Amino acid sequence: MLTYFAAFEVFFEENLPKLFAHFKSNNLTPDIYLIDWIFTLYSKSLPLDVACRVWDVFCRDGEEFLFRTALGILRLYEDVLTHMDFIHNAQFLTRLPEHINTHTLFSSISAVSMSCRNGRWSQVRVFSLRNHKLTNSSPDKRI
Image (cartoon, rainbow, N blue to C red; front, side, top):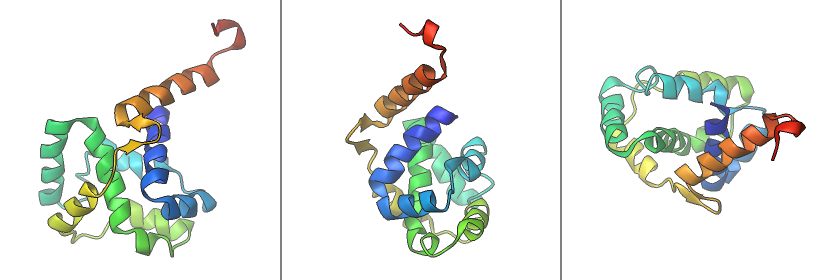
């Protein structure tokens, strides 16, 4: 998951720099909210009808859409989240509002760009994986 978090953070910083900086300054890392969202395919965090729409697009577009959805949620609540401290952000993100308008959320998701200076999602994820392997291998195993 660390490689996914690293790739996610690249797109987070690119799409939502103000919120990204706020999260960094509060030491709010993706593992606090993202694991629950991704592992449950949003079934715990979003209303069922909204989660079903996410599942439909996930089946069509693949894993990238799960991370794009996360960025869409952060984008949707950016104004609220930038005014909260660590505890309130963590609580908010682990228990999202029960009434999320599907159209508003999907508009927010659509506004997220999954291209950045380092490439598209799959390229950034592979790059993050390679970096993770290099930093975790012993010096004598590197070629």
